[in-house]
Length: 629
Image 1 (cartoon, one colour):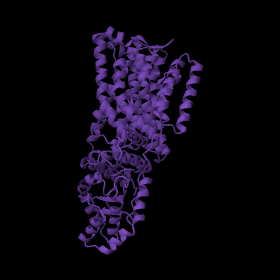
Image 2 (cartoon, rainbow, N blue to C red):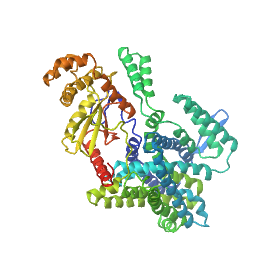
Image 3 (cartoon, rainbow, N blue to C red):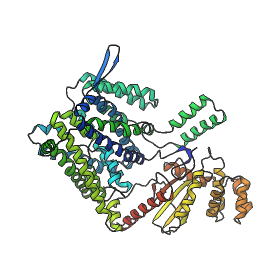
Image 4 (cartoon, rainbow, N blue to C red):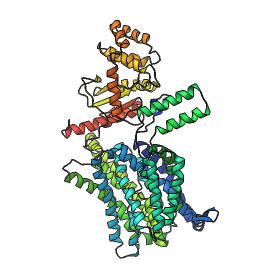
C-alpha cells in the first residue's frame, strides 16, 4: 500500500479511477509544452534543411512477411499508423464521458452536441464563402475540427485561474467535434473505396464487438484483431485512424465494484501468506480486472499518445519553409484566410450563439454548466486546430496550398490563444460575485451523493445553515482517513461549513474497522458521537474491544450499556445503511469526499479542499440568487 498522504492516497489502491475528466486534463496540460516544442522544432528544421526534412519523412518503411509486404513512407506510418492510437484515446474519453461524466445524464447531451456541431458547420461555411469557386474549396475540412488535447493544454497556460468546470465544458463540447471530424475523414476524404476490404473490416469490428459483449477482456486477443482491422481499413481506402476511434468507443467505463475490490484484496492476502510466482500473477490479474477496460486502456496508451505520438505527428507535419514571399502570398491566399477566419471567428461565434439559443429555446432548462465568460473562453480556445486539421490538409492539398493550409492552422492557434488570454484577463478584473457567475454560471449541477444529507439520520458537525456541506465516507482504521482528519478539522474553523461522516468500514483490509464504527454509533446513542469519532481517529492502531470500552469510560459514558451494544452489534444496521449509500453513490474506497453533493476528485490536502469549498460556496451563492434552495 502506498504511503498514506492527503495528496491522493486512498484505501483499496484507488487513485481517481472514477474521475472521467481530471486525469485526461492533467496529462494534456503537461504534454502541451512538448507538442509546442515539437512544432517549433519542425518549423526550424524545415527552414534550415528543407530537403533533409522532406527526405526523412518521405523515406519508405516496409513490413514484409514471406511474399506479403506493406510499404508506406514515415509520415504515413505516423499519420495513419501511430495516430490510430491517439484517436483510440479520443474514443475512450468520449465513452468515459458518456458513462461517468456529465453526459451520463443524456438530457445534458443536447447543448454539447449542438455547440459541437455548430462549431464545425459555421467555420466550414466561412471557409467555403472565402474559397467559393476556387481550387481550395475542397479543403473545407481543414477549418472544422478543434484539437481538444492541445486546446486543453494551452488553456492551462493562458487561462490562469480558470475553474475546472470550464475545462470540463470544453472537453464535453468538443468530444462531439472529434467524433464528427473522423466521420468526415471517413466519408468525404476517402477516395477509391475498396468495398470488399471495407466489408471485411466491418466484419472484423463486429467480431471484436461480439467478444466484448461476451465479456472477454484479454488484451492479447484484442491486439491482433485490432491490427488486422487497421490493415483492412488502410487497404479499403478509408483512413485507418477511424478504427482507433471505433475501438475506443466500445470500451466501457465504470468505477470498481466494492465486491470486486474485496475479491482482489483476498487474492492479495493469499499471496501475502504464500508469496509464490503463481499467486503473484493471480493477485496482479485480480487487481487489474477491478478496473474498467476503458481505464486500463487509457492508463496504458494515454501518456504515450500525449508525450510521444502527437508530438511526433507535429514534428512530421508542422514543418513548412517560411520566407517573406511565402508569407505575403499565404496571408492573401483564400486557403489561409479561410482557415484563419473559420477558426478565430467561426468557432467562438458558433459556441456562444448556439449555447445562447439552446438556453433561450429551452426556457433555461438546458444551459451551459459554466458561465458565459467560460463559454466564450471555450469558443476562443476552440480555434486551435492541429491533429485532425493537418490530417485533412494532407489528404486535401499538395504543394503550395498544403503549406498555406498548415500556416493558417498554426496562425489560428496563436491568435486563439491570445484571444483566450484576453477573455480570462478581463474576467479576472470583474468584482468577486460577478466573476464567479461569469465563470461558473447558474446551471444546476449533477448530484452524485445518494441519499442527500438528512440531519435526522446523518452525523452533522458545524453550522446548520452553512452554504457548504462536506460529506466524508471514512473508515476509522484507514490511515488515509487519519491523514485527512487534520485537514477536515482545519476546514471546520470556517463558520459557513458543515461536515458529515458516513461509515464505510473496509473489513477485508481493516479488520477492526467495523467494530470501531459500531463503537462510534454506540457513543452516538449516548450523545457522544463526535468525541468518540475524534478519539478513534487519534488512536487508529488501538481499536481492540477493550480499548474501545476504555474510550467510552474516558468520555464518561455508561460503560455497561456501551459494552452491551458492542457485544450484541446493536448498531450494525446503522453502519449497513451508510455502506448502502456508499454503493449507491459509487464509492469503493476511503476517504471519499462529496462537496455540496458533488464527488470531489483528486488530492485532499488543505489547499485543494479549500479551493473546492470556495467554488462550491460561489455556486451556492449563485443558486440562492437564482432562487434555488
